[in-house]
Image (cartoon, rainbow, N blue to C red):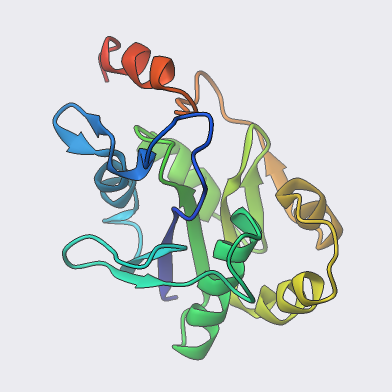
Length: 180
């Protein structure tokens, strides 16, 4: 089964105040931490919602238009995966570094769509959901990841323990002071 890794990095970062995908943690941009979390589990890693990726990472625009939040990036990833023969997408936000390998393995184990209850953009999504999500977004429907995931029958998985998420500069500073 071919698995596409997708880093959702198209947000406005209004609470952060600057491009958080490029903010440094342990000397590396957050987007590089996200790519590292996906590598080894996925066949290819792409970046969704940015004009340019990082070296070695293809960047694709959100679908069907920019400004749709994480679902626009996920929809782009699903369409990309479906058109290129991937069975599924493993998605992660650029602002959730340090995901444990065990948590990633729980997401990709088994059949069907699964996502983290605490961070719904982190999930495993069969590529055949591309058509449904495209229709959903094109019709102007609700853009909440959790509600769309529930509507398509995705299984919510609880992350055991702390799930690092960077929304503000203070979150990044606190994470930098915490050992991996």
